[in-house]
Amino acid sequence: MGMMPSLIKLFVCFALVFKSVTSLHAEPPTDGTTSAPVPGVYDTLKFGDDRATVLAKLKASKLVEMTTDETFIGRSGLNGVFRCRNKIGTLNASLYFDWTEAGKLKEINLQTDLVGEGDYQSLIAPGWKDMIALLGELNGTPVVKGPIPAKSTLSDGSFSPSHLWKLESGGSVLLGVARDGDRFQVVVRFTKKAVQPVGLP
Image (cartoon, rainbow, N blue to C red; front, side, top):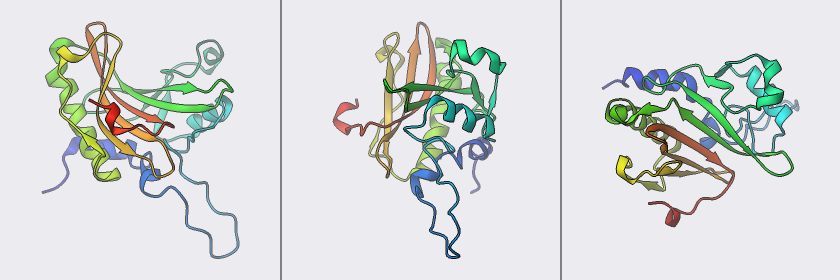
């Protein structure tokens, strides 16, 4: 049986993104020339990049598009400015970042649009299932896997991960659902931390 159309669309956006999970280092050149850039955690982004480097890489990326005028970035920052060119299910997804005190990248969050409680099963659940299939195809068997979090277990402002993959370079990839008020979203979190399975539900 062929791959579902929704997953084909996701591969357009995410195939290169997660390539680093299975091949973090480029093969050494055989002709003495300099090797090509090593794929990063998300496209060419790497933990430890500074803000200027992250912005330059995102602007050059074919996986995301800028949704605001660059002149506003200095005041508002990079969060939510870049959106994935293809959707997760029927939902748009944008990138959010966390930094060290020294201004170095330590976390990337891919978050879908927020949707109401009534759309949890029709929009959140299908997007969550698509991401499980895609991440499993590219990353192998997760260290932790569980059911989609029940709405009643999600408190306001919380993120409940259901799946965990380890990055070979160090760090983790978490998939789950977050809640903001009475709205919900699918979240994929790339973190420099080595998340321990005991810390997940």
